[in-house]
Length: 353
Image (cartoon, one colour):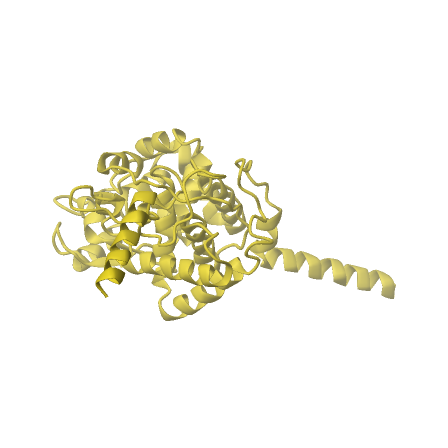
């Protein structure tokens, strides 16, 4: 009898542990196929402490400003959806050739998030030399932003390389859906990148953390209120954004704005989605059931989110000898001609000295 009681107690403890830990479910979740050139242990021998270096630094960053978690997650999205996960969004443009950051969808990217990525690049290079790409650092930082703000912990395949060019303004506009887009437009855009409706709804759950600028949702308030928006929420938003062109910001998830959880979907069920692109996921019959399933089952949301993130993180990646490993995330490495020019200038200085 004592043996039976002990076994029963052990069984109950195991069940409680499983129920209390979303990470265990996520770790065992099926992963999408891995692109050739990427691997789960890419830096195992060349930079074994890479992920620890990044996570430890981001813990310090988020203790000071948890808002940067959303900024880093968003940066990864905007990188991958335009030209692939190649760190092209990090590149500085010029007056004659504006970079992706100057395109309208990227004007509100967090400047500090960009600096954080390059600081992480510097730390990785100090530890291991120039072997870790800015694209991989951006992907790892996005994963850690999710985990360190309360979301699932999961592994990601690594081995991306950095692009030599950035996308045009038109390419950027065509690949990042605006907050005013309805479910049909979003489903179509995502389908073109091989995402199904479950992927779409899961990735949209990233809006459970972060803030938004008023101009992203004031078309739902002025001149007439969107009937799919909760009236109390609309009145509160009008106080924050008194005109259509207000420059203020507000939280995306009114229930737990700094915690990565499933409350975003609870908000959609209560007509409290901030963007049209959010709320229409519950209005549209093709995605309504998915929203509901995530609202009542956070573990399911985490599993589907991880699957979609790993899938997204492999969009049009550069691997092998493609692209480069940048020494500075905001600029491509100097070419041979640029290097020779630098050497000529240095030699000229030596002769003058």
